[in-house]
Amino acid sequence: MVLAHVAVHPGLTAQQIARALGMREPVIARALGRLTDDGLICSAADSATYSLGSGHPAV
Image (tube, rainbow, N blue to C red; front, side, top):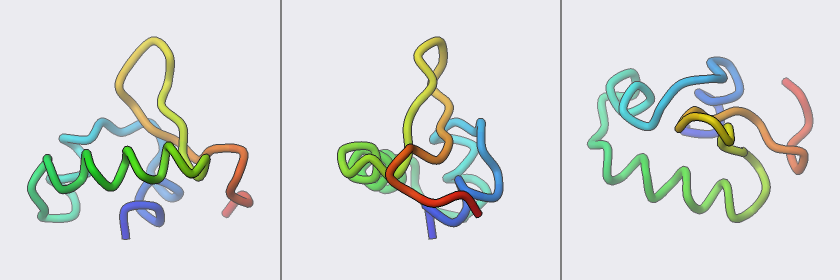
């Protein structure tokens, strides 16, 4: 669910993703951490926003 949301809405923060999905931010932060570790998403160096990483095909 988190990966799909980031794919469709890149450039959001964990807080924005949590609000959009109706979930608590700590839950989203853990999911984002796992997805980042797996290379499926990446966070922007200059902000706390997320987008698809090189390990995931473009949607």
